[in-house]
Each structure stands twice: as structure tokens, then as C-alpha cells.
Image (cartoon, rainbow, N blue to C red):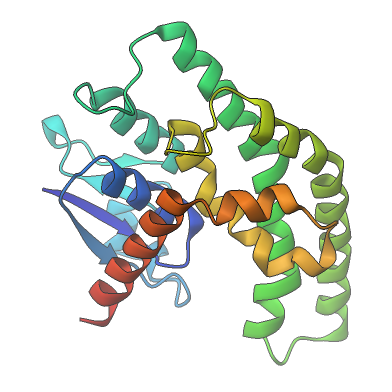
Length: 221
């Protein structure tokens, strides 16, 4: 059985959990307290060698694999009996190109905008005015990046052959959890009916709700 080390609110952890769920793998979720900085101290610092979550344990050879995209790609490439599997190398490469574009041009600045414009103001109630000014500047930079690539991302979701309105795909699984952040900061960005429609995709939404429930239960037990 796999062990997934991560945090329920980490979209990177959520992404890997969605792949495990969609591919039918049994796994145990092990919560890591990021807020306290425990992941940077022993024994977690040995397990989480990148200093970040997630990490997947239970792989052949005792390997503990880090980085959500590396884990997702491994799970996809190893799922030779599953409908999500794609054998053609060029198709895989093209799908990965779409994932990388969405990740680095949209989801990363979206993460920054959510962090500086939503999560930090909620968590740090005694922030100084200087800190808040830094957050606002970071928000503006992230907002410009998001806005610059939203139209291209929307067009990719609508027209790319690697997305489907009827079923899950490797690409849609790869970006769904990250795009959930759009809901946190939608009031700071142009409205996107495309993103909203994608987020209510029945199979993806059910998979997301299932893994969130599983992780929350494991964290509370």
C-alpha cells in the first residue's frame, strides 16, 4: 500500500491524492503539520527531503518520491491497465507540455495570489503595515501574471484534445486541485465561466471531494 505524506490544504498533495483515487490505488494518508514548521525538523526532514510535500512511499525499491508532478507522471505511466494510460510517447509528451504550461504560467502565480491575498491575511492577524504592503505588492505581481495567461489557459481547456467534458484525463487531473485556488481569489481576477465550468466537472468534482474527505478524516483520527 502507498503512503502519501502531505497536508490536506496543499493543492500539490490534493493532486497526487486525486491520481491515487482515480487510478484505484489503496493508500494511507499521513498528515504533516506545515503550519508549525514540523516538516523542516527531524524526523520529517529526513522523509521530506525537498522540505516540501507531498512525498509518496511504497514504491518499488523502497524509493520515496517527491514533487507532485513527478509522482503524478509516475502513477500515470505505471497504470498500463487503466483507461487513463497512454502508450504513445508523443501523445504523452504533448500532454505533459499542456500540464507544464498550465502549472508554470497560471497555477504558480494563482498559488502566490491565493497565499498573499487570501491565506496570509487570515493567518497572520498581527501583521505590520510593512508586511501588508509587501503582501499587496506580491498580490499585484501575481495578479498581472494570472491575468496575462488566463485567456490562453481558457482556450486550452476548451480546445485542447487532452481535456474532456465527459471524463477525467491525465491533464485535467493534473490541474484540477490547483485551479481550485481560483475560487479563493476570483474576486481579484476577471470572471472565468470556463474555469467555473471545469471546476464543476462531475467526475473530477466527485474525486476531489472524496480525497478531501479521506484526508480530513485521516488527519483527525
